[in-house]
Structures are given as C-alpha cells and as structure tokens.
Length: 397
Image (cartoon, rainbow, N blue to C red; front, side):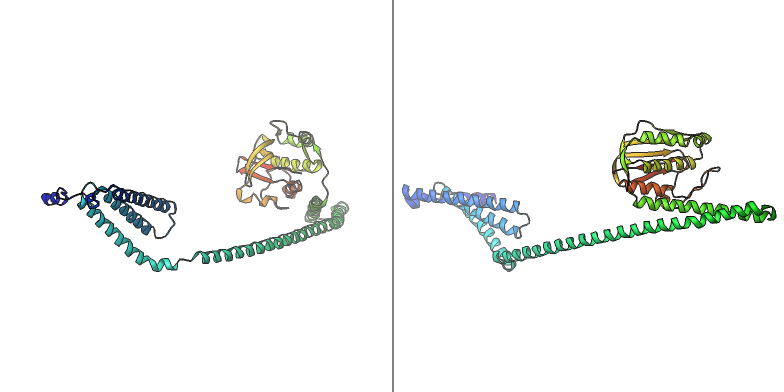
C-alpha cells in the first residue's frame, strides 16, 4: 500500500511542463505571469466573501457563499500548480487538487440548483424600493393621526380639567352655603335645650334632664362639624396670603398656646435643629403644624410624650425621592398601614384618643392635606404600631 502511494507520487519518469514550451522564455513567462495574476485574484475573492458573511450574519444562503469561496480558492490553487509543474513534474499532486476542485464545484452547483427557487422568490431592488415608499407613506399617515389624536386628547383633557375645576368650585360653594345656613338653627337648638334645662330642671325627672343634656351635647357637636365643614370649604377657594415665614416662630407660638395642655400631659416639643425659612401662607401652615402636633399628643399612651418637628434636605417617599421635607414625629400608638389613606378623609377617625383626651371631629388631617395641596406639596406618613408615627410634607408654593 505504501509502495503504491509512493509510486503514485513518484515524478522521476516525467518531464516538467516547461519542455512543452521548449523552454522558450517569452511563452514560459507569459503563462507564469498570467497564472500568478489569476492566483492573486482567486486568493482575494474567498477572503472578501468570508468577511462579508461574518459581517452579515443575517444574510440567507451563507453555505453557498462559503462553498463558492472554497471553490474559488481551489481554482487559485490549481493555477499555483500550473506554475509549479513548469519546473517540477508533480502531476499527481496537481491531479488531486483538480479532483478536489471538481468535487467542491459540483457540490456548489447542486446547492445552487436547490436554492434557485428560493432565491427567485426574493424581492427585487425595485420591489423593495416600492415597499419602502409605501412604508414611509404609511408612517407619515400614522404621524399625522398621532398628532391629531394628541391634539384632540389635550383639548379633551383641558375641557375635563375645566369641568372638574367648576365642579370643585361649586362643591366648595355648596358646602360653604350649606354649613353657613345650618349654624343658626343648630345654635338655636342648643340654646333652647339649655333654656329648658335651666327653667324646668326642677320639674323634670333624672331621665328628662339627661335627655336635655344629651340634646345640648349633640347640637354642640353638630355645630363643631359644621364649623369644620365651613373651614374646609374656605380652604378650597380662599386665596393664599403668601409671605416669607419662619417656621421656628410658628412652633414657638404653638408651644406657648398649648403650654397648659402640654404640661398636663407631660408632652414636649423637640426641634433638633433650626428650621429653614419658607414662603407660605402663615396662618394655614400654623394650622397644619398645630393639627399634627395636637394629634401627636392626643394619640399617645406613653408616660412622656415626645413630638419632634424637623426638616430633611432629602428623603425617600412613596412617590420617589423628595427634597426639602418637613416632618412631625411622635412616640404614640401608631397607625396600621392599611389606614394610611383613610385617615385623611374628612370626619374619619380610626382610633379613639387615649383615655382622658378630648374627642375631635376627625377633620384635622383632612385640613392638613388640603393645606399641603394648596401649597402644591405632598404629604405622607410612616408608622409602627406601638412605636409612633412620622408625618412628612413638602411645600412648593
């Protein structure tokens, strides 16, 4: 076997191909230069095809490109052998290279035949151009429709906003008128109950006296609710008296006003560091701080009730990062998370005050949110049951 292979590649009995040209230099070098040029071209084409296939991985029929590149490369190799055998009669090697070239050529042909139907289905440049024009036209139409719908949507939004503003204003006016008109009969009812109790107390039995006292309490309670409703309606449509304000002075005034109450309840207001000056409606912000501090004292079961009022340059909130944030923190009974929004509803009181504290109407936190809204800010809270609550708010007036 080895001997047969050795005999096959033995070229001692052959003459170089140059003898066919009688070693005539002009003809010899014409073939050499021509074959060399073909080799150079056939060597460059496969690398160009390979580069193209690598860069365009989405290209269909990649196998054909690779086979065609191999075919061209082998053709170039066969021309290298044409130059080689001019001086070295290695015709066996030349024949093997030609045979390999033939095999790759035939494989390329059959793959081309197989892919021709698919290739014929590919759109022509003219068809692609037409489709591209149609897509551009459709895109232009969509842009016009989107712009029209956006303008229409904005107009509708403006109309809805105006309608909502009118509705809110009408509701505020209705609440103002209704609460104002209710005050007089309620006051009359309370006064009549007091007069009856004063004039006929000795003629009434114990149950009658208790009923009149209850009637006086309920009418007084109703008057408080009406006052709160009237104040809430005024918050909605009264213009803010914006001015530069010192919150430290506000806290000092509240502390003086609540001095007796704070002393009786062993409560202390703490301001860790001076609060920055702000631009706001001072009476409204005073009301805001007073409500938060009053609730912090009222809903507190600790022997020493601590209310901390402070300012943070930045803090995380449910709405994202907030800057320039005030807070009122207590060590009271806390609030369950599910009621974080409920407590801001008017006349909604989820917890009873600690024993011995006066019961309010449940409108204080509603006023707080309304005041913050009027100052274009946000209000939110964090709380832990039994450990206390912190109310945060921003003011952007």
